Image 1 (tube, rainbow, N blue to C red):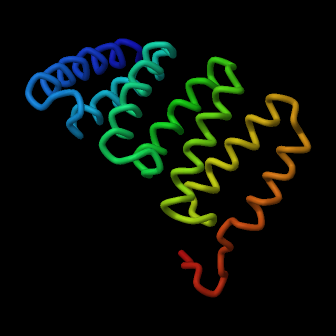
Image 2 (image 1 turned 90 degrees about the vertical axis):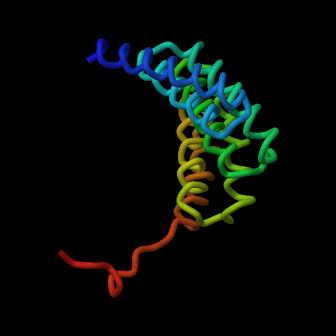
Image 3 (image 1 turned 180 degrees about the vertical axis):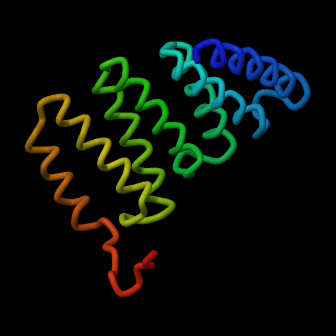
Length: 156
């Protein structure tokens, strides 16, 4: 499986080079390809390379769309996951906070992406030993999570 990931990485690097040469660094497809490259590096455990890709992508997206944009928040989620994998929990927490701000500004408090980031933040707090903080966040999540209505739930 790692051979196929390595091949995918080579193809992504080639595609990235093409997009960069034809459209420039800040073009949407170039940035998207950079994100895919970061994900490929992350899947291979190459966290520093992944972080380089994601940081450049977030810089480009912020320049194009503004900091609080949900597309920027998506990259902050990826950056947080790399920091968390590297056990850089303070940095993971900061990146998650940036993602949370972007998603909240775009969608409000009850959106599933906001809830997902809050759940991640609670998990990071648990890893850091901040159990009280994690419990407070989990309570908030349970209050703000959309509730399923069994009358409208489809049955199969």
